[in-house]
Length: 497
Image 1: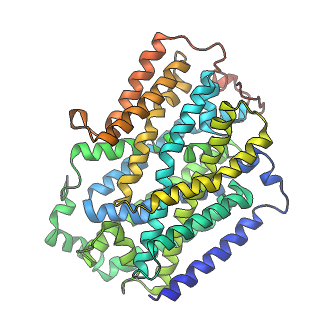
Image 2: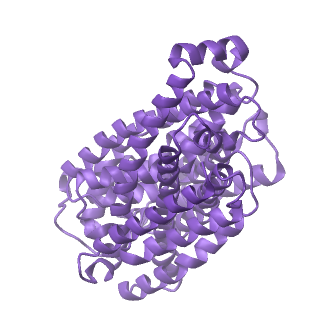
Image 3: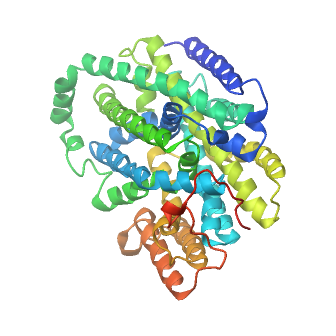
């Protein structure tokens, strides 16, 4: 594979994506006129479009670069790790309709806004919003790093790591600005189709070259049997596995760039179709990513870094150059998809929940201007973080989710516990974040357990204890949350301050 072929693949991808992004505007400026239009697509997205976009956003550089690298390093435990996340998507079946109905009834733009309104406190929204900003910027950097490792590895350094992350950042900013979430979702859909078709073809070709599944796994069983055993070659222990998988299980409701999309479908039927298609996509993509990791282990057993497994495989003689470039573009697109989705989510959170509440500015048009203004600021922060070149993409991704998981008790309480209070939600989020950051900064592990394990129970205890010791605020809202039958999806009210 030549560098020029890689560059032409990137150029063609950029041109096609730009055309799709521009066409998503629909010939008018309506798509960028309000917070709801710009960040939620006017709450009118269909099930298939939502599913493909949800898939491209969720299964990002983490999967084809990170999960393949985790498999290369940790063996079969990586499959168990991802299957736990896959099982956690079942939470969307429980919370998806509730998010959608509450959002439709009250006009929420962000999950943080929903929590603040439900508990009757703008400070809950501020705390949840700042938590998202703190932990999702590093997660964005992980996606940028995935692109950097991919392009650098496939061109043997001709395209530098720094050039790769800059390309991804510029594309993410551009797609975010063209038409907001509409351009992101339409480009996502194109990317998702490319990803799934090309990645399956590569998997089939490489495995057949290595003697089929029987031959490939036979080689692993003979040369590296520990890779097929639990707990594996040393990366996974029970506590390590639990620390990685627990935050991942709650990913679909704890990560706002994902849960915000539950506000977007046009109907409950569209939401259900989104979930079903996403589950099918995710199962195939998980199997392919793990297979890639094992294939790279057989073909290239002595790589310097596990995160180079995918790039090395795609640039090898096992994969036809054109197909390798197509897959590379798919992974690049997936990473950009996740980055621009996070950019839009974080900018909406900053404008609506942080700036809007602290400045007490409820003007929708002004909030939209603020949101657009901070998009490049957040992008630069992620770019600086990615330039540090931290290793093991998969573990860094989970570290971000370990911080976001502290909001889960407040989210569950919003729908299932009338006794939950604003003080309980606020203390659980702020106290949980402080506890997780303290663990990461000091390296202390109480009882030998990681932040990924202890963050959730600590925040849950704080939420329950403080809620029981305080009373719900008079401004707390239960309509559309605890009394589902009373929710009138057609009515939209303005959230309370």
